[in-house]
Image (cartoon, rainbow over all chains, first blue to last red; front, side, top):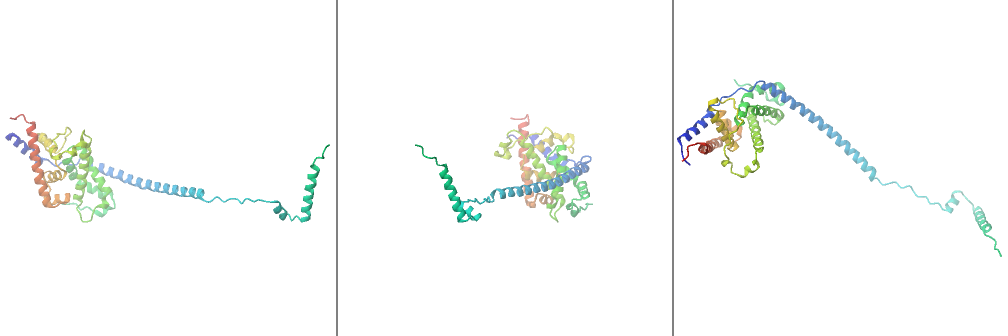
Amino acid sequence: METNPNIDKDIERTIGVSKNINLVDAPAMFTQKTMQRISVAKQASRFTTSALLKIAAAVILICINAYTINYIFDAPVQQTPVVTTTIDDLVNDYQVTDMNNDWLNNKTSKNQQTHELPETH
Amino acid sequence: MPVEIDIQELKAKSEDAFRQLIDTFGKNIYNLCLGIVPIAEDAEDLSQETFVEAFNSIHTFREGAHIKTWLYRIAINKCYDHLKWSKRKKRYALLQPLFNREEEPIEIPSNFQHPGIVLENKEHAKVLYAALETLPETQHTAFLLYEIQGMNYKEIAETMDVSVSSVEALLFRARAALRKKLHKYYYDNTSFKK
């Protein structure tokens, strides 16, 4: 690369600019504007905290509901006992005596006989 | 006479204490931001963001540290984040980290508006700032704090969280890299070529 005295001069002048940069004042209303942004940030952080609390409460409620639903569906179904009653149980329950029982049997057999059709020739 | 900043009041998030902090360091922070991002509106926005960040993270400030260097560190991080974000918007920016940063060409910004630079120096200042942007962050910061902010080695070391000898080395490398880049830029852009 060629060395040009003009290039060296330009380089020195460019680097020298850094020494001639004046410090400037902060823009007008800088403090007020910044304080306004800080108060917005403060409000936002408050909102975030209350929002977090709301979310936490909602999550807890959902968990309780889920647990309850799960508990209801997982609980063993209480089966109603199937009562099978026989004639003998009935007899025992109503204290039907043997005599009555015989009578019942006779009655039944009589009925059977009456229902039998006479033989036709 | 330096103003005493009540750290306990700041930690209690007292608005008066923050107002005092902004009054005391607002100018320094704004000029620091202008040094990294030489666009007045962006620098103002970044310096305001610096104080908002300070407000939000004041609980992380260590007792005994200097509030000024802590604020400077926040501002520097904010400004570099902004520079990275604005570079990312450019085309092919994703491919740039694949290439050597030292070979990155100087691109003169079209929206340069530093209120602290007199008109006769404006063209050279544009080239200087564009060249500084192509330096590694640590070299850029060291050069800026020493040459533009007028800080001494010890203050720079404290702000950058490095040793004083590292600051010397960074400044040496920054000046050398800057000369090399400026030489290439002026050589490519001058009409005098053999």
